[in-house]
Length: 183
Image (cartoon, rainbow, N blue to C red; front, top):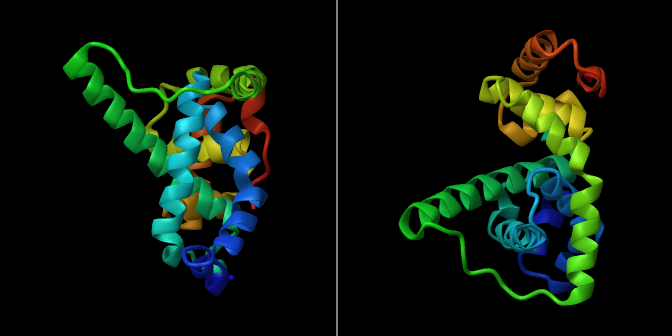
């Protein structure tokens, strides 16, 4: 698998297959976290550019492609949020969006609407420490195993289990927090 990942950086056919295999999952992942279709489209594109740059970092023995890809997506989203905040501070508003056609917007609006409950869950989790919230998001909302969540976050599996347990204890009165099984 490692050779396959490295190959996507140099082989357009391999990259296209990788892209088609994961585009929907990445779009859903970001639509759960972003409520603007234009921004979702832009960040999805940035994620796959980042994949080309970091394909050599994937280690199949450490977890699935999707867990690695979610890690890339989290870092890309974090960078986008920092960039947008900085731009907001400088200009007072976020600008520079690319134009989408009607079909693109309709599809992204559907995806953003479909992920409304996940965004509400994020609001409920906002008070958790970052490490606990991140593990809970990946396991409960993104349906990764604890092992995959640990890979995506770059932490040990044991640390991920502890963080997940703590987060669930703090939010035990909310029905969604027990979804997703630790593995």
